Image (cartoon, rainbow, N blue to C red; front, side):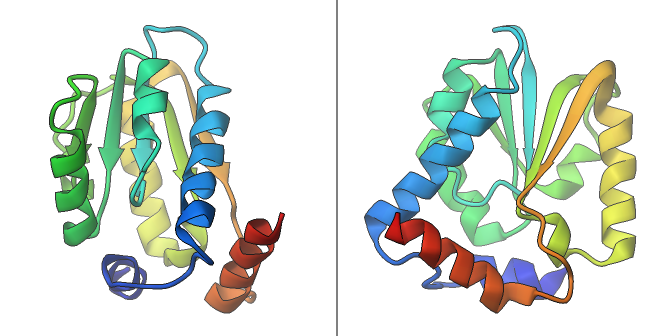
Length: 162
């Protein structure tokens, strides 16, 4: 897991511009909001990245938990969202200590393809424990393993051209 976490914790240039980056996170937020059934929903965004539009998601639910493995990104999230009482920032390790069956919706967007099979199994075990019986897991933006990060970056650049 360290390779992809280190990459996303570094200063990388996967976005063509600031506008491209902002639109990317706006689209993700809009998509997550589409899965929120009620204002009482508790949402977990697993390995959320910069989550620049998280306040929009938080506005549509009771609580948004941003779980981020990269320490630098997590620090920026804490600073950015400290005033928002509907957003909590956690490490992936913190999730193991959360109350069982306390989450209505878990989103894993553009994460699975970077995990080893063991890491994914461990993540899914934690998520299974956290999800309410009526809860949902949404997996998004999963690339086939043989495609790799360069193709992922190319897809982001194509999105920027739209």
